Amino acid sequence: MEIIVALDVDNIFQAEAFVDLLKEKVKIFKIGSKLFTSEGPNTIEMINKKGCNVFLDLKYCDIPSVISSAVKIAGEKNVFAVSVHISGGKEMLEKCVCLKNRPLLWGISVLTSLDENNLKEIGVFRKIDEQVETLAKIAKEVGLDGVVCSPREIGIVKKIGGLQIIVPGIRLTEETDDQKRTLSPKKAKEKGADYIVVGRPIIQAENPLTIVETILKECSPQF
Ligand code: C5P
Image (cartoon, rainbow, N blue to C red):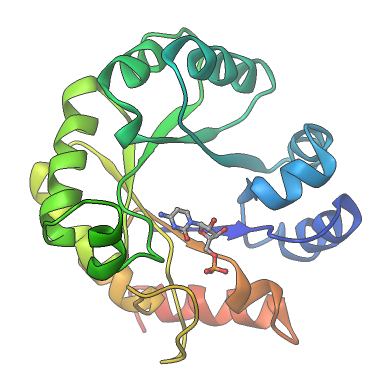
């Protein structure tokens, strides 16, 4: 299992400081809406130049031609993986899958910040598990490389098989914030996550490197 650090910071200088500090231990950094809106594609180049990989987490969801063009451009910029909303529909996903030299395509299932009440508010009256299963089956059918889900749904995606499992909502303590379906790194690993995405527990820590080392130690086989 690998750690992806979510660089949800204000600017490229802060992002670069985290990459420099952590790059011996962390090989994939995530650029999300916040950093990308603030600094744009320069952030991709900065991370690649330091020998690390980029997960561009812009959670693409739009008409098929627009999203497949965006994914193609991400490939030209040497992005390692991008996220696309599985709920954007099969046609949008298929148009991305068939691109040559594309990044890995990781499908967003249900955001880890949502619970069943939030789903009801948007007209989804099923259990989260069922919704994740339906979306993960679509991901498999169209040929996505992986699915992003909460730690609690890893088993559902594992059962479908043939998909990388990318897991945000990782917490080292019992604290709760806007992430509602959380689990510890060790438990996520035991359940079968291939990648964990960790943001605030690392980037808001007094000593981010120590937190990364703690996670790696906790997840090593001898621990
Ligand atoms: O700070 P925290 O560890 O909660 O960050 C989790 C990261 O994972 C955020 O950058 C968020 O955008 C991302 N993410 C998520 N839920 C998803 C997909 C991505 O929280 N379903």
